[in-house]
Length: 137
Image (tube, rainbow, N blue to C red; front, side, top):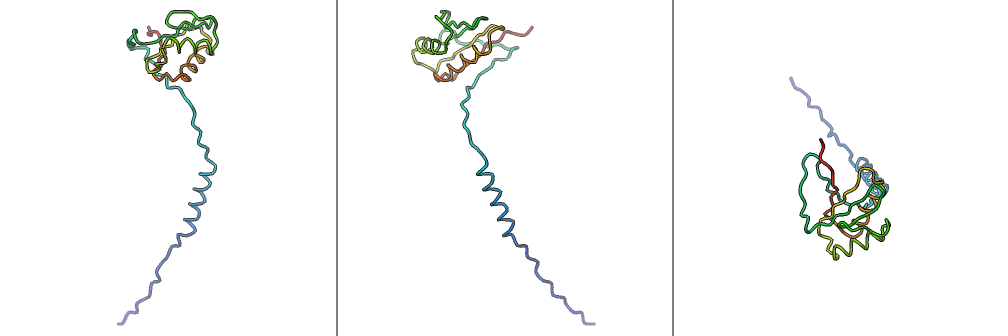
């Protein structure tokens, strides 16, 4: 018995259309994606259970009262404007913005006053910012 061999045609998959689709998707995502660099202030929030002591001799402290008034290292400011706070922080820090800055705010302080203090600190270049909390009971 003589068996006849069947010729098997080689199966070819044409990858050109697939590569075209991938390149079109790549171009679509490159064009439609927007890259925005948001300026954010890194905030080191201490844990409420474990409080750590900060070197009080070298750190600056901004205290915000319930009425939204600022005190820098215990000295009150003439008004609650961001410009006044900026000048006070520049004067007290001697333009050394590597030292730690602690923001202490009353529980009833307006949120805008805390945001203004954080914004001024970020604009000046303070990188070691912490917000105080009280220990949970």
